[in-house]
Length: 70
Length: 176
Image (tube, rainbow over the protein chains, first blue to last red):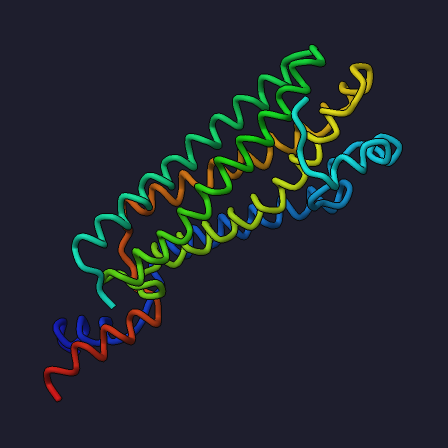
């Protein structure tokens, strides 16, 4: 195969850029790390960092009416 | 669909302003979190949660949404397309991911802000528990939006499989 033919063949096949592969690996590692951290600790999601029920119950009515100025 | 130069410049102005503003607002949010973490004063803690609620709800969320939609508009209305180039596609995915996490987290921040406004001074100190979570969310959020910004500036080369197929079709068209 001539060098010119080789270049043509290489251009005719699709290849994912290397920076995308590297970024994908980094993101995957980060997701696994964050997932492992949350699995090791308590659950996660909106409201999961809120104080205990006794505190939130006392102010639950204010939450329903939105944010108030202190 | 290609935008006229006037509309393209307007959309670009909105996109740059909202994206850079988003980064600045997250840094301001982080400054409030760090100030609250390093203070033992209950009034500072109360005020910090209130400020985080305001900055989050009325600055960060609108800027994130504006950045997301102006980015989609820009990519659809220019030669880049939404799914043709990896840097555009990854920017879209990261922006969407950051916005969804933000919309979830802002509910927690507002709940804390509401509780902080009603709590007695003796109990406000309990609200320090939520600050680590906010530091983590805002810290990771800042990294993500800076990565998006860098990709938008450098525009690293690389067509997606969809973009590559489209390019192949276009190069074959003149020969047909």
